[in-house]
Length: 547
Ligand SMILES: Cc1cc2nc3c(=O)[nH]c(=O)nc-3n(C[C@H](O)[C@H](O)[C@H](O)COP(=O)(O)OP(=O)(O)OC[C@H]3O[C@@H](n4cnc5c(N)ncnc54)[C@H](O)[C@@H]3O)c2cc1C
Image (cartoon, rainbow, N blue to C red):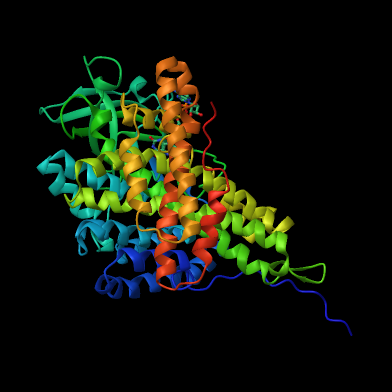
């Protein structure tokens, strides 16, 4: 009797133990003692991510958050019910200190890297619970930077606690109907209350994610202020009163979205919501910048985390699926396709974690002027570059499963839908490309970037890697020549090329970081995989500038 065909599904092992890229990176940047200290919890989280949480995520696939606006007696309650994965994810996030680690600073400037490693392992199995965590982290950083002692004492301990019953998450309410990119058009008005810091907010917020959060940082225009971004102020508010009732906030509906469907993203009306000034009655856009820098870092870490998840599943499946007499893993073309995606992932990984390193050094007060400038420039560059890579890798990952990649109950389509938000929120690709130009100011030279690339390449002694380094340097030269010409031509000319320019900077620094790591990996007698990814990436279109 013939045995009916059965297809083995892809499975995941311990997502820390199996991750060559993460482990090799941490071995390079962390002192041995630190690595010994942090590895047990990374390994436990890796086990959860590849096991229990992944299974829960698949089982909870059809659940979505629910909004109940009215109770049986006609009272407005606007209650949100979260999904099972989100409830579990919150507990795990607090227990493993996925936010707290960055603030406890047990490992000085490297605490951010440690935290990002936790976030990277946590993210792909927790249905974008990374969204409220990112905003919570960003709110803690913003409040600390504001120097507003009263708000720091009131909120920050909740945001960075390891005690689940004390934990608060934060929302970030910027986008209005008038625009998410051009927030200067915001129409929400702040009317003064009894004391100088108390205000009441009136207006509509058009995208507010993780609306279950206990607090939010938001922008509003104090009455009488000038139009535009400068006239907006940054406000802190608590969303519900002691009885759990919304504080003059109506949740009009939850968005029906392409992806991130487990994230309750709401449209709100603020009807006199009590709020406090965070710092000053103007310059809200500038004052919320620390939050955006942190959420953009999280965006990059999420991008690499989703790519890694897709590839872990795709490589596993390649060993299980048979076509034309052998497994896909034995097909040169299939593996070549996956190796191309792996190269994109590794490049993105090193850029995202490099920005984590710079962020950590800045937070620890251990950053010089040049690296502070690099952090300012590379934050938008990293966010826009890695987000684009995540979407294209996720799309190819689906194809690598054939029809199964298009079928919902494999859990695979969610990867693409969730990745698609990464280039949109926290600043679209174009908006961040323009921000990259802003970061450069009127500078015509890319000298600090060239000096970074030179520093990264100076330890390289393998002749093939030296050759690949030349690709990075010539790509920087080209970007610089273009910048000079475009600045001398016209503003529209400069803006039209800004996306290609910013992506070129991102991919160039990714290549230089990959080369540096490859050399280190070779010196440690690790296998050739890092080299192969580097060589592949170098030939995959680094310089995108067109003259
Ligand atoms: C799932 C999801 C959750 C979100 N959660 C939140 C949240 O919690 N809080 C929040 O505040 N916002 C949130 N947003 C909103 C998000 O940040 C905005 O959608 C985003 O910033 C873009 O703004 P917009 O939608 O108004 O698009 P627009 O600003 O209208 O942009 C439309 C297009 O124009 C382009 N564009 C705009 N300006 C320029 C320019 N000067 N030059 C060239 N191109 C330009 C953009 O790149 C984009 O492609 C969320 C969005 C999504 C999808």
